[in-house]
Image: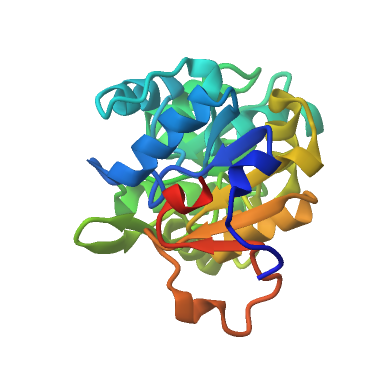
Length: 267
């Protein structure tokens, strides 16, 4: 490793924390992570929750963490849905344009905050944009409508490409599995906004103050959290409580700066 974990928390003023697999597994909190966040705040550190999970709204995440003893405000969260909505507003002309989305309440709420008109059902086949996130109520009809819109020329945007979702009983299909199905059917790749796209990390830094040398990215996925943090010029920490296992480090580039079994090791 590039450094030891001894008093690592002292080196940083801000911490970007992934949530699924880092703070909890589905609805089951990871006790060490809950204590870690409490102690960071006692030390006056900045904490921003940065998740590729596009299903839930920021207020739903706030309520979820509150139930685990972690009090936060909506401004403490940056989700892939919120980042995707911002990305669309900054990079496309959206006036008089429409969108068909596959995803949960979080994605719908974020898109409602843009200038895009949301289409549902068969209307979606004429959408100018197809935006795809994690959808636990996915149906063949949703894939069919999105596929028709993509073949008609709709822009193809994905909130994230996480192939799996870490749960207490193992790994479930993630948003990336849905995106891959549509990429195969449409014959083209989606533009992915969430980690490891540097856009999402830069958006996070703009919220925390942009001090790259004083910010640590903590996550459980090498291909999103660690790669994305490295692309943004951040030090990174892999916690082995979620998707990645120690053996996955072999041959992966870039290597995380820190690897811990428990976040409390950083203290």
